[in-house]
Image (cartoon, rainbow, N blue to C red):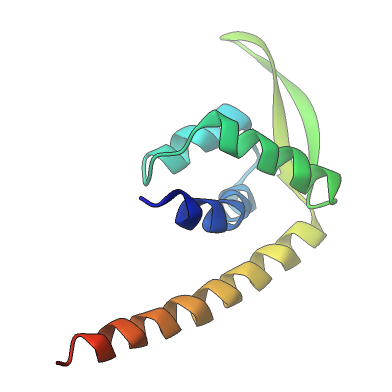
Length: 106
């Protein structure tokens, strides 16, 4: 998949996954990687930026498998941002779908 496509939707995917429940970084990477290839180097900067912008809070939680993990929790502002991005995505993907369908009518 084109790297620019992934970069454009990664923020939205992270927000959506955290809307369901709190998660730690590597867990998010695994969930996203189940759908499309993504690297740690692209997810962690998104997590840092969105935390800095107030869309997440973080906390440490003990792990039975090693050191404590940093969990991300979606804030109210994060939920608003998620809904904005979903609306933008739906409008954008609908417009692109129409262009594709018109181009295939030849």
